[in-house]
Image (cartoon, rainbow, N blue to C red; front, side, top):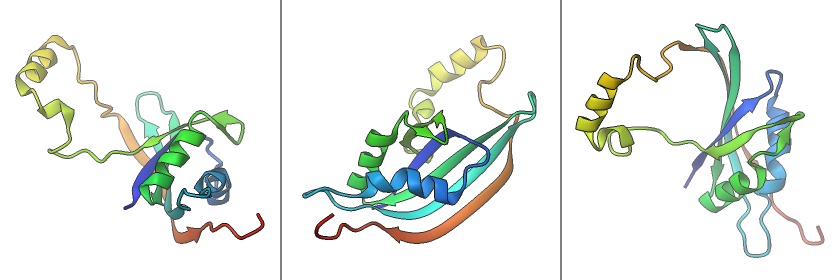
Length: 143
């Protein structure tokens, strides 16, 4: 199974090679741990229309799930190009897993109490760079 990993607050000049070099040590399995495979990297730039600031993110596809969890555990709050970044699982929201839809009555009541909606309606996609491939990291005997 493939898991999506979200890299938050990356530098604006981060490249595919930087992300591969950052993730590759955590992809290598141990004696009983499976090696990970980096399937896809997507680098995104989102611009906030209100403040005109641009934030950069990356979504990385890694398989299997055990290797993905190892990457998240080992790399969260580590520095990438001098900046500590957050590494977490990326969840795609739909009707089945959206916590806001579980109790719609309280959501409507709390919405009335708020002055404005909390969603970031001022964000827009600035650019997206997709890098697809199959990068395997296998251990050799003697390493």
